[in-house]
Image (cartoon, rainbow, N blue to C red; front, side, top):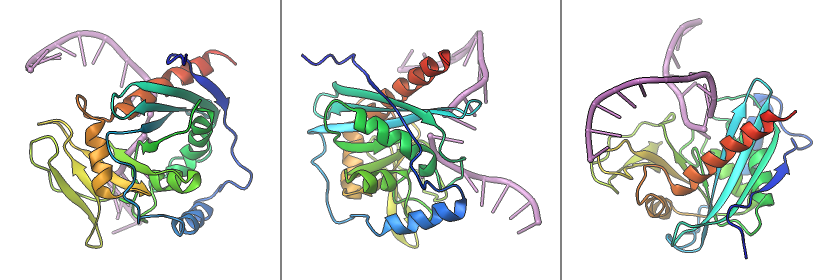
Length: 239
DNA sequence: GCGACAG
DNA sequence: ATCTTGTCGC
């Protein structure tokens, strides 16, 4: 019997050679971007495992806690949870968010009791100034299909979508649609969806809608958010 | 040069 | 992200 309340815990390390300067991080983005797979449609929305990841910080202590929570896309029931605590790997620089969160996120994904499904990240994928946001970074490094669902607009502006759930408007970069402002709840502020890796924008949006039957944010993100916050508190309560 | 700027 | 009480509304 799998105990859905069980949470596997791990420690995250900052990898050898991890960028320490913005210049180095930009170079890594350029290198990894060549490995992006934008040709796949991704897994069918509403079926199979879907894994949400999120992180919480204690900048005072330079500690970050990441959580990965896998849900059954059909029922939205939790099938696996894991957390990873470690040092903050990079300062917050808009456009370089991945360098701050990725080590802990990967550790949490690896600590899951079962294989992750499509990864839902809290942030952007292709809708990024250099087309390589957090969701692209996580996708390329894990090889998993990944999407980005952000709560706020980044550098790209979008017209307000219609008032109904499912209404959307494009986020454009150089005339190309790289993401969408998507209304997940009627009359509520939209979320900003973009493909990360091995998934199409249409399917990224379909997955997002399948994960938001009730709340604005995907159930995956809500679960991961709650988990990484408690993990951070528990980590701080010690040492 | 000055702001804006995912989390 | 994080600091933070009550409050209006479904």
